Length: 478
Image (cartoon, rainbow, N blue to C red; front, side, top):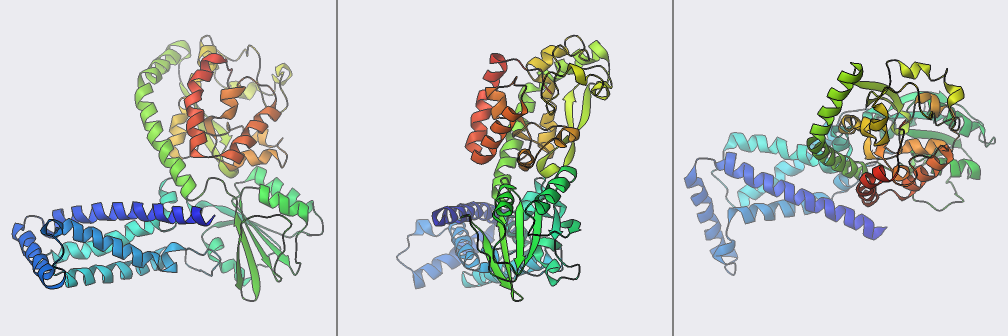
């Protein structure tokens, strides 16, 4: 794990070094000096003079402004990374302000003092004071974006401030309600449970999880030293963020990674088993955005042809919107090319007797609601292509479990709910293996296998195999 942490910090350091160096050099040439060509000569002469006085062993080829800027950025990042402030964001500290201003101001002070020191020592004396003033504000904003992934995640569609939490056994006037982990998120419910009952807590979470989006569970365990094993295993398998407040240090029966703080004579135990969160979410979203834009560009003639076909066949609307359950139970509008007659979904209950599948999956052989030609679109999953828009909006991913209707979620047990803990997708392990299965248990097994083994490599592997599976097996869609 230590190697993994070092690699993560090293990669972020390299990315920041590259971005800040490229940006600062560009900004220096374009704004700090701009058309004042003599300014370059003055600075170079200053650097050469200092070289002759202090480090004459350096050759003239290395006395370049760009090299000095890159070296300054490197030293600045070393100083920044040596501070616990930048490299570690502790959510288990008190905060009553939902704004990022305090964090930004600290970055502003460190950057501005370092920049002014650099300009003074190396005698970059002819830069524009106005644009230099602007530079002191711009770089801290870039650093804030990369500090702890929160701001970048928000830009890419997953904001911390839109996440929800529920509390158990936490008093309404508890000082711990001012913890950063809570003040940045939205409370949806305060509940009380008896921890001696192993089922009560699980049933409460499971019930709320089916009705609302839940991202964080906060549990006050009182003075107990260990929570029941059944509850412990359930919380670990929830794939959500969990905070346990206790008067005594907790002892767990399972081995897992967690952080612990001792605050106000109380132990705060926190673990985050959210699979697609932070840097993992950012990498997945960036790859989704890039690949989706490419797919829309390449498939635009196909999309246009389908649009015209449906218009001529059965009129408008061409694209329909359906309420589906997304990440952590969030409801979103999923887009599809219409392959059925209007208002066909309302006939689902009346046609339930024709459903030959289990109670969760609803598929009818030779569905009478599908208009002529629509079956071909469904066979090759062409009706799902508008969901590329959902991917761009951050509601879906290219790869993940297929999103189901909210009424289907009501049939989920606490194990099935795990499939909601990753972004739903256009394709997945099920689609490249058993696309026509009528058993939700098979769906679930593939979904859990995907959740357990998720990585970007697995996503790319599934994407590569998806086109071949379309022609190997037919599908009637959802």
